[in-house]
Length: 83
Image (cartoon, rainbow, N blue to C red; front, side, top):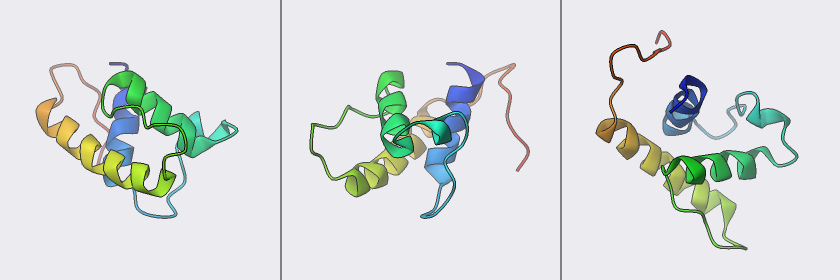
């Protein structure tokens, strides 16, 4: 996983309502959908079915991202941003 993808998973795991979506996803036509598709592509979540309630998908994505991080702790050489 690329460092920027891991940072996205970490952001999703800790994001609160109203937090600004990180770059480059923030510049997408639909930032939320872009983040969801990226997480699905990384295997963090399953791709939601068409017409799914995005608010619910986002809530579930946060839970899945936290679980994914527990299962995939940073390894040697992983860039971890300061807290």
